[in-house]
Length: 336
Image 1 (spheres, rainbow, N blue to C red):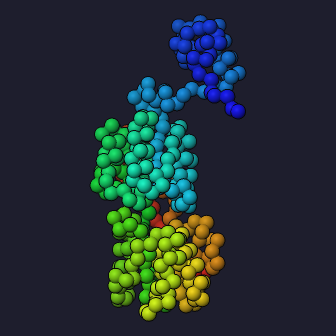
Image 2: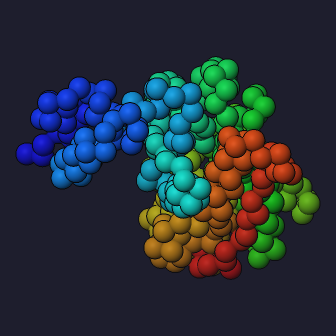
Image 3: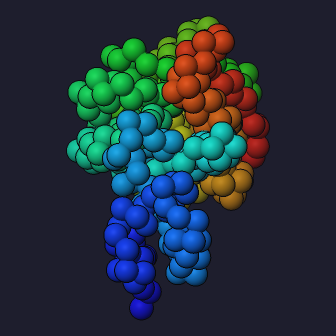
């Protein structure tokens, strides 16, 4: 069994001095004799003493720790965002605390309160799917803790934000499907209150309008997981006026559509085209590989933490408080 980490009190007890003497010696306070400081440092090294970062934060008005909220660790895009954040945070001398909301508003609120207690110096966050109230984020701002939202942003609070160009990515994807022969494209959507949903839906709708292809309510479905796609797609494929193309809100959903097409015996892309949004590992592991919109998650993460650090450090040279990361269409085997 691993031993618990050694504390200042443990060192003080073993060396027969007061905890305050140990604390000041570890900070090389000249009021403590060189001999005592040397002894205490030597003991601390030999017993692998590590200072308690949280306790240090609680004793100071500012920490160098940034809180990061991820909706889902398993999602490729969010993992890439986190990778970009970690790389830039390390270079800038900041630590990060990462927490997963698991797409739940209540968990998101708990995380924010934990960050408040830890006295983080800033927060980077993407909203859970069911978050529609933002009082917990306003609480951070009320404590002078800056926030940068990424991907799923909060428009009700005036903060910095980093998004991908969801509208342009969706428009390009749907336009390509139309230009390669699709005339009845269905859109599988996420929660309608999310900004990414609004922007991707608008891109889909405008591409269809440009080519004078009518869209009715039956062609837009609330479906943003592989499981949901597998549940609802077979009936659409076997019914009258079946779609000849699908544009999905993410790659997981697109993979569920592809699975359903195979079950019903439809040939992809000869009889039906499919396009996702993310370009993660799933897109390259399906058969055929998915056509999708690449989101550049690492760039999103790097941009988010750069904006936040500029805000924390009062960098007035920052030209913009918002950042839009361009997307690009990656054509593979699920479209013609």
